[in-house]
Image 1 (tube, one colour):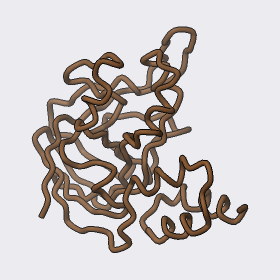
Image 2 (cartoon, rainbow, N blue to C red):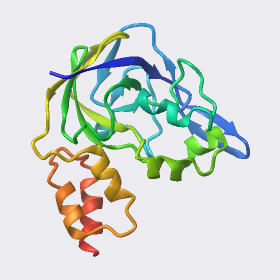
Image 3 (tube, rainbow, N blue to C red):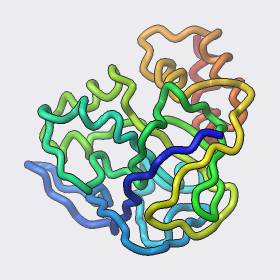
Image 4 (cartoon, one colour):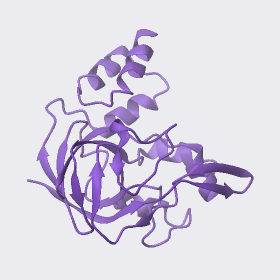
Length: 214
């Protein structure tokens, strides 16, 4: 069974942040934890999330692959140990193209399930003063993704992601990215992605609505 290294687990409290001319509340500036922490159905016990884009049961935990860090290095400032895009877990070996919606993992005492890609927002672009960052994330597909928590439990630095089950629908996170960012999606593309029953409950109705408008 596949096992993936978790380089760091990150948390932060919501603060009023200012980058350039933009000021907004965010928990984007996450730092690695050094102790055991409880993972609840809505996220890490000492983490906060602004609700307009993150959090809730369908986006309880955010992953970003360290595999993508070299893609961004040199184009933007990277600090060792910090979460590049405010992710909760920075990982090795697991990414959008080899992971399916509905794949389930053991993480410490917890069990988590992939729900949807992370959709980049203006706060990340503002942090790095890179207005084109959102487009670059979409075009590369290097977005990261979210999990829901199926079983709560304690996690700690050094815990790995252990694959328990691959989702039978076989819809990768990248398949969903390609649909979300397509300039000309088809009904067939929507239907193939919607075969993943584990998709985020907040995303499914949006996809159905857009499909029905075609």
